[in-house]
Length: 438
Image (cartoon, rainbow, N blue to C red; front, side, top):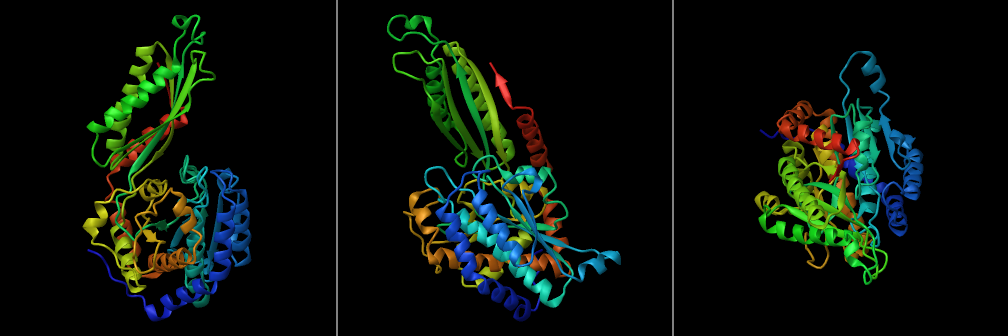
C-alpha cells in the first residue's frame, strides 16, 4: 500500500522550491560550463572542480577525489540538531542524490549529464534549505559519480562505502519524454581480442592466420543471434581494430560488445550465447581469443513508494505522465544507478527536456547530436530544476515523514535476491580480470 504525504506542503515544499529557484542562475552557469567542456569518464577534472567549489561555497562539507577516484566527490550537510540527536541515541536518517557529469566521445553531452549534475546539486540544496531553516534532524549527501557512460563510477563508490548509511538515494535523467516507470535494462560489456599470425597477403596468405576474419565472423554471428533473443534484449558491437595494412594478413583484431536484458538472469544467458559465438569464431579461423568483461550494470528497480510520491509531486508541478503501463512497455537504456538501486532504495525517473508541457520531438533522442544541442537550452534547464524539486520533496519525505522511510525500505526488500547474487558473480569475474582464453 502506498502511503500519502502528511508533510504540510505549503511550508516545506515552498521552501524547497524557493531555495532551488534562488540558485537558478549559478546552476545554469555550471550546466553550460560543463556542457561547453565535455570530458570523458574519469577525466572530468573541470566538472569536478567547478561543482565542488560551488558546493563548498553554499555550505556543504566536500570530499574531493572521494573513494580514491580523482573525479568523484561527496558533499554532505547535517543540521545542527543532528549531533545532539545522535548523542541521545536517536535514529537519524540520511538521504542521498547523485550527480553525473561525464560526456560521450565525439558528441559531447548527448545524454545531458551537464543537466544531471545540476539536478543533483539543486535537490541537495532544496533539502539542505529545509533542514537548515527549521533545524530538523537529518543528513543530505550528494555523490559526484564519474564514468557512468563507460565502466560505472557508482560501482566502485558502492564497494568503497560512499553509499553506506543512506536510507535512500535519488537522481533523475534528461530524456525526450517524462517518465517514472520506463524499463531500464541491465547491461554487460566486453572487449574481444583475436590473435592470429601475420603473413604477406599476396605472396603467402596461406601461412597467415587471419584475426580480422574471426572478428568479422563474430560480428555477423551476433547479427544472426539477435533473431533468437527476447524482444527486450539488445546486442551492440563495433570493430575497434582490424589490421595495419591491406596487404598483410591481420595478426590482431579486436571489438567491443554490449548486451542488455530486462533481468540479470537473462543478461547472463545472453552473454553465454555471445561467448559461444566468440569462441566458435576462434575455432573456425585458428585464432586464439581473449575476452575481458568490462562492465555489469543491473536493471533499475522502481521503488514503488518513492516513484509514486515523486509522480504525485511532479504532477503538482505541471508534468503530465503517460499511463504507467505505457511507460513500462518502453525499454530504456542502462545505468550504473541500477547497481545503487539493488544496494539501497533508489529512484531514477526521466524528465522531458524538449518542452515543459510534455510535447515530444521524434528527431531528438539520447546519444544524438540534436540531444547535445537541446541539453544547453533554457527549457532543458527549467525542466531540470522542476525535476530537482520533485526529487528534493521526495527525499525530504524519506528524512522526516513518519513511516515513509520504513515503507520505502520494505519495498526495497522485495527485490529478488538472486539478481544481487548473479551480479556479485559477474563482478567477481571482472575483478579477477574477466578473461577467457580459447
